[in-house]
Image 1 (spheres, rainbow, N blue to C red):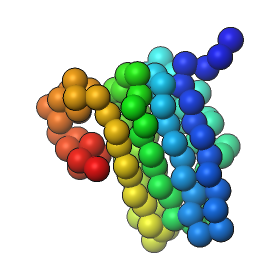
Image 2 (image 1 turned 30 degrees about the horizontal axis):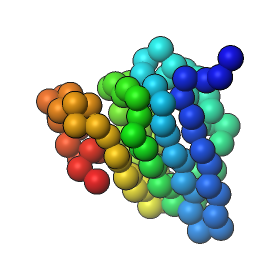
Image 3 (image 1 turned 180 degrees about the vertical axis):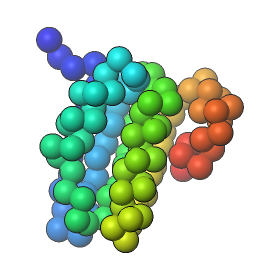
Amino acid sequence: MDKPFEIKLKNKPDKLTLKFSGNLVINYIEDITRSVTEMADMSKPLHIDIANPDSIDLTFIQLVISLQKTCLNKNIEFTVAARIKDDLKIILANAGFNNIISN
């Protein structure tokens, strides 16, 4: 069975990009977190690309914030780009996460 989410890794010498799509929700957050832990080299700048997810909830946003804090603690550059449907943007904005979805 295919996973209900997708994480693509682009590992360049100067930056690591993780591109997320699909269902980025609590039902799959343990699998998403495990995949990120296995893929991410937290020794170089990290870019998170949230690419038109089918669904997204606060557990995924918490993961993004956790990655951001890890990078800040290691003095590593962290950026986020998000392409999210308007209805999902409203939900996240109402929860106070404008800084994540404003890109």
